Length: 290
Picture 1 (cartoon, rainbow, N blue to C red):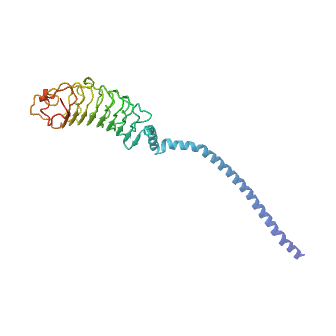
Picture 2 (picture 1 turned 180 degrees about the vertical axis):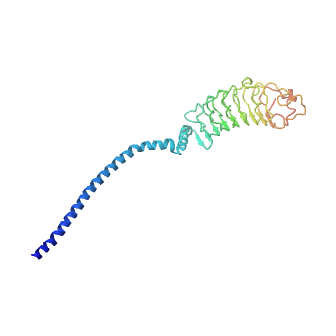
Picture 3 (picture 1 turned 45 degrees about the vertical axis):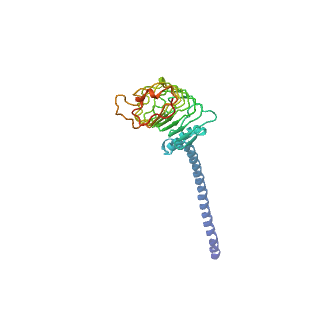
């Protein structure tokens, strides 16, 4: 009997212990699953919240905190210059717009770093004050072979760096105000008359070296700066000269050292009648004269 009781106890106690342990494991597992599910639910809500909030965060960074915004603005400005470079050839600092097809009738919008503009042989008829207002870097402008008949007086006034201006083969009847640093001005083959050139238009240009005004309708030669080396007035309507045109009539010792070339052929002018007009020059005017 004692042996039976001992055997029963050895069988029932481990079973009871295992059942209790199994119940304890099951309860925590169920409770843990619930907690995990609840936690996953919170994660999902957080992810939704972050997704809803993320666009605002990106906007703030782009508008106020991203240091690359300036670079993006610069790229947008370059894109704004693109139409010019589709019509023309744009290199670093230089724009070439020659014989553009379809016909170019106005000065195109230029990249702000433009130093050299070649817009030859087009159909540009007028130069306005706005065409070059924002391009202070310009050093050379060549508008040869257009049909320009009018240039507003302030069109070149802000171009403090402009050194060379070519307006040859156009239809100009008057010259606008010219920038002070010009070294070369070419207005050959136009319709200029003396009344279309201001009295001191050239005299104020202290750095002017080359002046080409051939094939116009000038009746007289305006005052010229001392800096000139080459000046062409061929094929105009000039009929007379004075002792002050090139020299200083009251100073017989004055010599115009800078002047190397004067051209006056093709004018109704007899040089022999004006011997004192060239006394200060180192060489007589070139060309064929009657």
